[in-house]
Amino acid sequence: MAAASQAARSAVTSFTKDFYEKKIFDPYLRFASAEDEERYRREEAQRKEEIEKALALHTPAGDLRANTLALEQLKDAGAHGASASPDYAPTLEGLTKTKEELQRAVDTQRSTAKAEERVADATSPQRASPAAPELSPDVLAAFRRVSTADTAQAGHGLDGRVAAISSDRTLGG
Image (cartoon, rainbow, N blue to C red; front, side):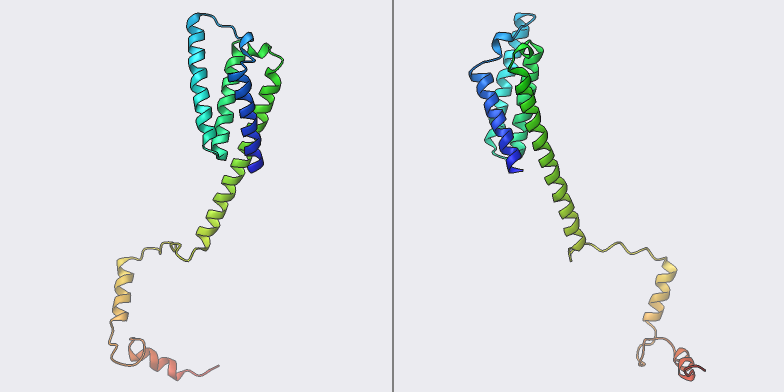
């Protein structure tokens, strides 16, 4: 996870330097109108801010978000002509690869954590026991009669007839 996160962070950092500071794709950009360019530049600035916020988290999820945003920005630039740059395809490939690797690592970690949680829940002493089946009122009443039978005598509260029958029996006979 750490290696995939670092690779994504490095790819995004390199992209932002080339894209926002060096503006390597700007010479290739073409817009249908001034309004189109204005919208593009506004979204470009918003993505840059979001990328910086995501990287500032210093987490795999933040790095993944930054990588996703960088890819979105690059593809948007590609739709406006940046795909003609010789740097476009390798940059797209690099960002795509690091995003996929980090996504796999994050997904693996999530599934492992969920599996561990299920095991912990299943083995926890405080785990709720399965619900007992409901008993009919007649059965409950029968249990109450047996348990409240004359318990002054020794034994389990059943009448003496059961005890007499079992004392008359011998093994094998």
